[in-house]
Length: 330
Image (cartoon, rainbow, N blue to C red; front, side):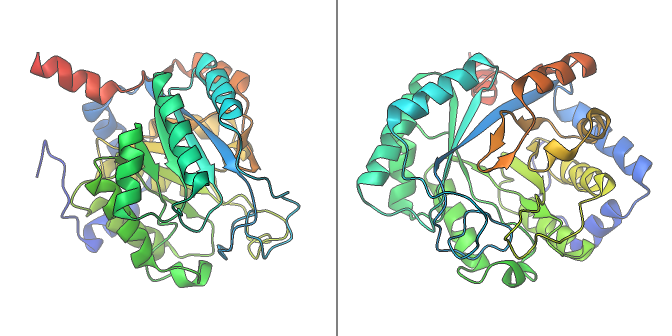
């Protein structure tokens, strides 16, 4: 145990928290959130697709899988200058973390990877926390990204280990966990969460939260995504995720992982300001900003600024944890 943070949660304990009466759950989560975080502060992140479509994986929710006809045009890896221009715009609009996503199954040691390393250096020099999501990577590749200045690596579990095979067959749950392990060894922070609305049960959601909250070190960032139903994917006719399910997931994640950034991610475009306010109250303290999340719609910077003003929220500064650590050491 560390500062009251636990990594030994049992499935039964998580089940009881998740299934507690909703208002009681939100109150408890808000209390934990206030004890560990500045509740007026929200991390603003921007996600850019630097290489779009044509992926060989079969993730049932993803418009970028080559095998589905979703109208997503395949685009080669962007040029560094274009990426840095986009990062500067995001920074000017208030983002402090810039995430670059490439629709690859895994990282390959080639010129494209060298170009990504160059982009990482460029964004890092701008004073932003730089994050990548590039699929699976080995220890050596993780170390190269760390040396280039990578701050975080996103690799979601998506769902429980039991339900995973229903959504993806082109890689295993253990492959995902191995990549996360490689990221940790390289000293890069971990961004890892999942998606609800894939057809999973509440037990699957609890299982995924159990995997995340019992890792030797909690992920520094846990995105909670609501499925964006994309025409042409196998899940296009799934029912819309209920806002109360999002609130329940966020609140439970906050109680289990008190100091983690819990990110209200995909699905935000379909949420009202009051829906999002409930999520912030339940412990969400990070969002993706900007018109697109890879290839799906997202609220604009202006809409988010208006919401922040209304709710009395402010963007979190970049590298806050590191700055606080240095102050403690001084």
